[in-house]
Every structure is written in C-alpha cells, then in structure tokens.
Amino acid sequence: MLRLSPPGNLRLNQTNIFDINFGGTEANVAVSLAGLGIHSAYMTRLPDNMIGRSALEFLRKWGVDTSMISLGGSRMGLYYLENGASFRGSQVIYDRAGSAVSEAELEDFDFEEALRGASWLHVSGITPALSDSCCEIVRELLILARKLNITTSFDLNYRKKLWDSDKATQVTLDLVKNVDIIMGNEEDAFNMLGIKSSFSHDIVEERYKRVSEEIFTKISGLKYFITTLRESISADVNRWSGMIYDGSQFYRSKVYDINVIDRVGAGDAFCAGFIYEFLRTTDIKKSIDFAAAASAFKHTIIGDVNVFSENEIRSLLDGNIYGRINR
Image 1 (cartoon, rainbow, N blue to C red):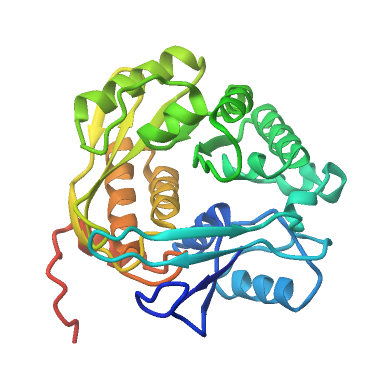
Image 2 (image 1 turned 180 degrees about the vertical axis):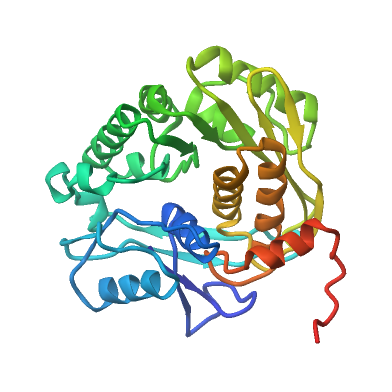
C-alpha cells in the first residue's frame, strides 16, 4: 500500500503536503526478514504504472524477491495516517477499494513455483478481507503449504473497516485449519476467532493466558499462539511485550517502555523477529524475546517497515536501552 501522512503531528485538515511511505503487513514482514538476511519473496499484485513500479523498487531496495509479484489492475490501495500525540490517538483512513491486489485471481500466480524451496509461509487476516478471490488465494496457498510441510503462520490483524467480525470469524476459522502458528492480540482473537474474552485495554496476563488456552481448544493441530501485549499510557508512551503459548507452557518476553515515534508496522516487525529467530534456533523463548526487541525498535522510526540489523536488536536484548550516541 501507499501511505500518505501529514508531516510531524499535523492533522489531516492542517496540511498541504504529505510524506510518502510504502507498506502493508506481509510486505513489512518480508522487508524485515530480508534485512536480517533471510531470503524473502513477496506475493501480491501491483498496477503496472509509475506507482506500482515505485513499490517494486522499494521492495527490491530492501532485498525482497519480487519475482512472484503479478502486474495488473489500475490502482494501488492507499491509506492516510494522522499521527496522534498525548491523549489524541492516531487516525487511519483507507482508500483501497478496487485496488490491484483486491482484484487478483488464482490464475495470476503460480503457487507451485512460489512455494518451491520455501520453508515458511506467512499470511495475514487483512488479505482475505480484501475480496472473495483474495480469500481463495490465501486458502489455496495454505493448503499447498501444508501438503509441502512448509511452516505456516497467520497474523490475525482484524480490520473492522474491511469486514465485520461475524464474517471474519467464519472465514478465519476455515483458513487456520492449515496453520501452524497464529499471531495476534486479544482483540483480534475475539473478532477473528470468536474467543469470548472480557476484553480490556488493561494488561492482565492471566486473561491473555485464558484466551490462549481457548484458542488451542478451538483449533486442532495448532503448534503456537503468539500475542503482543501493548499498554497505551498515551499515544506517545507505550509498554510493550510478547507472549507465546505452546499448548502447555507460557513464556512472556521482557517488557519495554517506549516513547513512540510511529507504531504502525510494530506487529509486523514482531512477526518477522519471531520468524527469524525461530528459523535459526527453534527456541521459543529466544524467539519471543527477539521478536519483542525487534518490534520495540520499530516504534522509534517513521514508516511501516523495520530497518534494524540483527546486531542492533541483540544489543537491545543485552540491555542497551539508554539511547546513548554510538561514536
């Protein structure tokens, strides 16, 4: 997607200019992984025009394999982001109806070729919300990945501006039958999986544990449920951590106190951080800690994608939290 934002903390009705960034949940994950040295290919559909080609160049700049991207359609989806401050929350306005990817069809992609040699397939709940054909694409990809013994992860990412909770739950429960790892927060679990929790903005670890256990009861064959825990003190100050459940034990990462510059894409940075470390070590404790540190860093930069190196993330893991000048 193309992101348009007023500079700084201006409101949309105050600005005459916009800062431009590219992003999108699976694209953000692919960029993060590529930056960490993992070969990452991104599958989508882009318009064959200057904006679509700019998006391709952006992905290639960060090392993402774009050979699986189909060209067609007339426009790229975009969104407007108004950054919040203090007690004023950020605002997002979508303009993505009729986007090239929402009009994608099964025949636009070669699934066998796309998954050849792959070890991991990551998708999000945003893609099937775009159209029935996008939902079918995600379903076929997940089924094929399961047949090929490829690890699959699904980031719930509920967006109420794209579909209602009833339809989201019906579709998602069908899709995750072929998923190894579900990622998402408590609110996502309510809206996408029908997990009836007493949702609150307060972080209560025991409540998150109950949600995790209910998910494992509801979805057979699941290996892990991973959740992010965000406590919003204000738009500028958050407490951030992650938790993983393997069906028998829980592990929570270190908690980070963050002065937020831009929180968009933090969940994607979290997903990428977990995938990266799990591919290296298969250690869920190390992986959830790395994920939390990677996504904590993402909050400190403008834009949707995380661009920090492994060494920088490990330095944060080792306790370098004071932001001193590195000379």
